[in-house]
Amino acid sequence: MRWLEVIRVRTLYASASVLSYLTAAGETLTAIPELKRVEIYAGLPANTDIAIHLLWEKGAPPPYGSEPGQRMVSDLRKFGLVDHTTWRRREVPDTTLGRDVKEAGMHIDKP
Image (cartoon, rainbow, N blue to C red; front, side, top):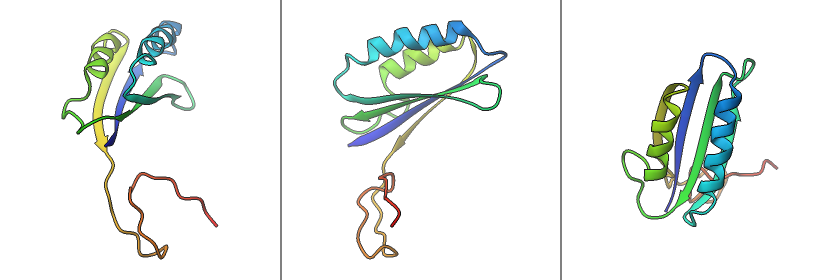
């Protein structure tokens, strides 16, 4: 099962130390085989909001996120406000496209 963990941080100002932390954390996270993708986004226009997306492929998502995600949340609190959520993909039929879409989160190319 695929599921997504989203960690958002709101800092007072754009900080190089947050980016340093995320770079080091990213190196650690790449060693986890069940973690399929790590994406980091900066909010516009001020770059004081940062979103980290961790895409997992393993069992059911824990209600409070993964252990690495929880550690990251704890570490990021020193930089500002932190929000942490987990999301699972939902299976829904899509009759508008004339076929079943197995995952609501899958990407569909436009014709």
